[in-house]
Length: 313
Image 1: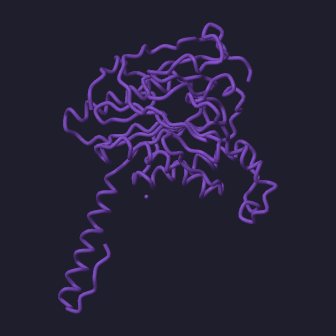
Image 2: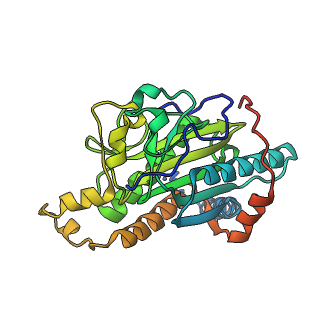
Image 3: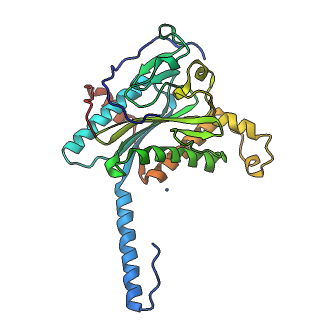
């Protein structure tokens, strides 16, 4: 998938209507003074690392039990990006942010997305369709899918888009492996997370002045039917899968580790997946998660949104 695009995008859906049902070892020196020096050096290094990590924080809006309209989440992202750019211009600390949520059924397209990957007429689309400033082709968001929108100041991490995309994939791969015993992986030349031929998670980002936003979507208990009406991410001959679907396939596998897994209902599965993804996000990016309250969102609601200027990084 393309990961960075530059364009001016209208903040409105292409089609809007009511949806149909659906992460050095020291050589030991004999001299006691040298050993003491090494120990002090390690202690100093440890203290510095600890202090650095303590200062790296990420505010988290955990709304995963809510179906947040796409336009609303998009607006929140752009407002926070605007705030972070202002902080950088004033040379002030600019921490990271993270939204975790679900969306009602909706299709989203990247700036350069082609309508040839839509298996329907835009005038009679099954759900709302939004063209956004992220990279990548068309994808679907809907209930049962955990969406994470990290708004990351890459100056706090690495100013490297390849590193960032691989790190987002790592978050998902770890969560799937540690929590669900699902062997997920990357496919060379493609962005996202896969199990065999099934794509379990899509990633699409936008980066402006080294502030990254948009993010990733993991199919947990998602109804995959709406993916049939598009060519997901513009990839022909690939399937879309979900955690629920794979766990169902594993029921007949003679693997004691998998047999010990619980059989949660959809709500519990979303709870487990959300907690695991946030934990792994914290580990991969080495950030401390600070959960925000609804009052922060209410403040964002009151703040007017002006179009983001497209600037070079």
